[in-house]
Length: 118
Image (cartoon, rainbow, N blue to C red):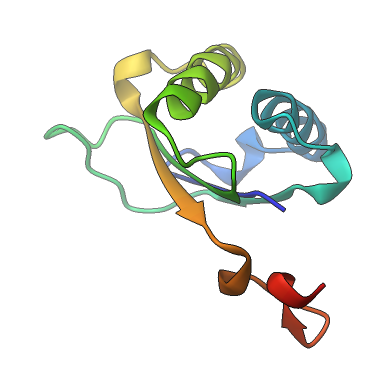
């Protein structure tokens, strides 16, 4: 159950439902997970300064169990996600940062328990 959080200073109208559907597909493919397991949040219209500039940019957080736990995996995921974001949002690669966080089953709650016990 990967968690994808896209935080940006781009306006909300850049993220219609069609974008969300494509983004879920792209991130699921990049992580090798089924789309119905993905949790994707888009947080637009945020104040954002990156590299000394308030130009449009994205901070993407990717967290998951067993998918973000090595540099090699994260490099592969990054290589798959960057082209999607640059093409769909019209941003250059230097205006996108991805933060990876590994999760353990005991860190994710669902159905009144944690994934360790499901």
